[in-house]
Length: 80
Image (cartoon, rainbow, N blue to C red; front, top):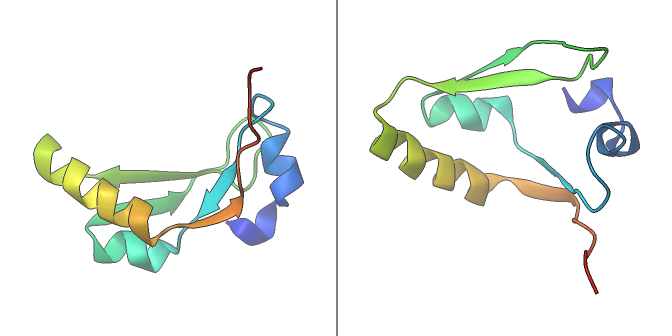
């Protein structure tokens, strides 16, 4: 989905200070997630990522996916 929107377009949909991370759909599928293109509200780059495993296993796999993800735009510091 990364080719469907720039990082700036993605950040424009989120509060100031947000960041962007990316991961490959193949990596998600390899961990048992189902990643599907699901455009919504004018966002052609939106995708849904689901996991049918029980909650404790889903959390373990989500942590692995997060570790495999790369920071595209780091979040900006907020507060004083």
